[in-house]
Amino acid sequence: MSLFQYEYMLRALLGALIIGLAAPALGTYLVQRRLALIGDGIGHVALTGVGAGLLFGTSPVIMAVIAAIVGAVAIELIRERGRTSGDLALALLFYGGIAGGVVLVGLSDSTSANLNAYLFGALTTTSREDLVTIAVLGVAVLIAMIGLRPALFAVCHDEEYARVSGLPVRALNLLLAVTTAVTVTIAMRAVGVLLISALMVVPVATAQQVTRGFRATMAAAMALGLFAAGAGIWLAAVADTAPGASVVVLAIASFVAVTLLVAGWRRLRRGRPQPAPAPEPHEVVLGGS
Amino acid sequence: MTPEVLTVTHGVVGYDGRPVLRDVSLTVTTGEVVALLGANGSGKSTLIRAVLGLVPLSVGSVTLFGQPARRFRQWHRIGYVPQRLGAGSGVPATVTEVVASGRLARRGVLRPAGRADRAAVAAALRAVGLADRADDPVATLSGGQQQRTLIARALAGEPELLVLDEPTAGVDATSQEAFAGALRAFVGGGGTVLLVAHELGPLRPLISRAVVVHQGVIAHDGAVPDPAGHHAEPDHDHVHPHGPEEPAGLWSTR
Image (cartoon, rainbow over the protein chains, first blue to last red):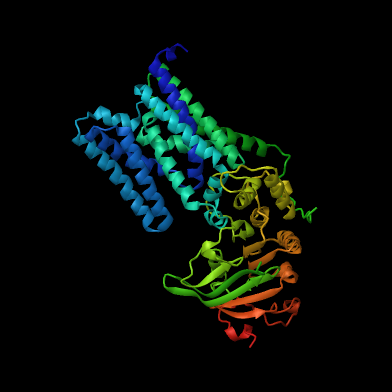
């Protein structure tokens, strides 16, 4: 593809592919936890870090990682403790985060274009160092999410049972929180703060319409994320659209396509006279044999 | 080795200042099958949650396998069966995936599943009669089958003590029978059981001791109350341990 003869396009593509794999791997746990929008919230908090970085002339991405981790751990501790007040505490954190970010960016001499880069992503400005950061952190996220899958699945599926199993429930929860923060900050480069959750959640929502198990859902979501990232960057290059938004639009297009296909398939099967409305399966008592 | 599998000594539990358990002492020894009976809100579920460390005791102490619960780390010796599948399940999971969680207490967080783990999962699925549903999403199972999945999950860890919270509540007859069979095999292998129950049903012959919890205290500890068949009598006065305004004295042996 001649478009990718430019190094910056190649870097954009590589960065997007890594994020396309890592974000849905994490997102599978978040969806199971019913925390689908947590990435969005942490993205808001990360923006304060970006603002602080721009204001004090330190690396915005590093400051964003720090702010996001602090925010994610705070959210996890609130979740662990609270019941009713958790909702409000989260709202305060989210809106405080984005407002703080906008104020801090305003105080610094940065232009609004600079803020936009973090709000909506600026993949094509990915430097060589950025790509290394994305690669290292992305691979770390993938290793943690895939390597610890049984334990993370147990904690997300039934936290009390995991506790009685003697699993380090709090450590695993904090690991998920920190991983979310890290994924958010590297995905911020690609799709921007406002679209991060889409890359974590939409491929999972698409995959679980056709999968039967957790592992299969995770694998399919990662494949879909990879596809959306690759095709989105290609589309951005060909049609000169915003790369981050193109990735998300393609992810959502896959969701719609799969939803329609599944609905059509169901109707087709129902249309056929044969398999009567699946009877309650036989309850077999094997008596230990 | 002490034969005491678990003890609760003068346990007190309160939620938001309201006492749920008031000075409860209970000892379960190896090989016993103890049924905790009582009305809704009597504190029987709270008692097992306190035993498992899911609810803190405000007064008193718990020991598990002779060790203070605070220092207890051998969680693989305990298999816990909650009342129902945890609410958190936005993503589909197969029966095998859920049951495989039961091996984590034994193999730890970092070690990947080996042949022994897979064999134990398969054996647990057979024990509850769900081998043919192994690859189905749990969400497509009936309530009774989901309950059996949770029992298989506990059995997969090859525990010495099974703690079950209302395992047969709202479960169809087939699943109750399958469940009773699995429990019989577990007890036959030397296992100890502590279960909370509303109705004993097909489990009754397995129970070696009944403990009735009433308004946060133990009202009866000994033989299983109201013998089988009694209920069936046409003029039987249907008095249950879970009658709301039941006097405690009815179940006390004194």
